[in-house]
Image 1 (cartoon, one colour):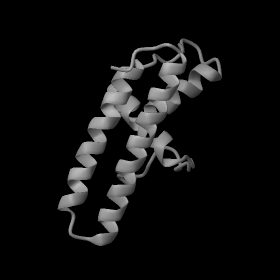
Image 2: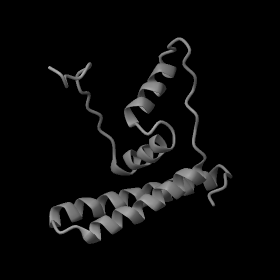
Image 3: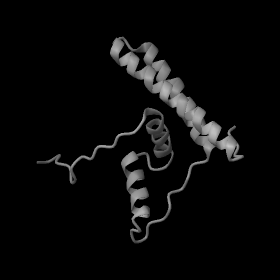
Image 4: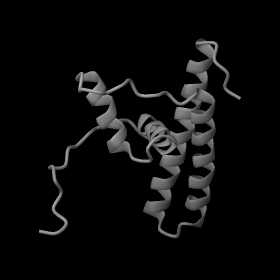
Length: 114
């Protein structure tokens, strides 16, 4: 089959705020959550040539999450389907929640957030 994936799909369960934060991190690095996870797993499993993943500064993650929440809110306002609108509103809330959590963690570590 032409579009047959090389590997079977794997499922990963994760809370919304963490998933949204990882999405922003992925977009600022490789742009692909799967590639980011593979890099992390390779490093954890001592794959030859693997290096620890580079961390994005909290200020960039927080700004990215807040910006994404504004865009998601805008999309929710324009959405006609009530179920889709609710899903977008929940996504925006998760993005804001992760931004708030990262801000709190960065303050605890004495790192800049603005």
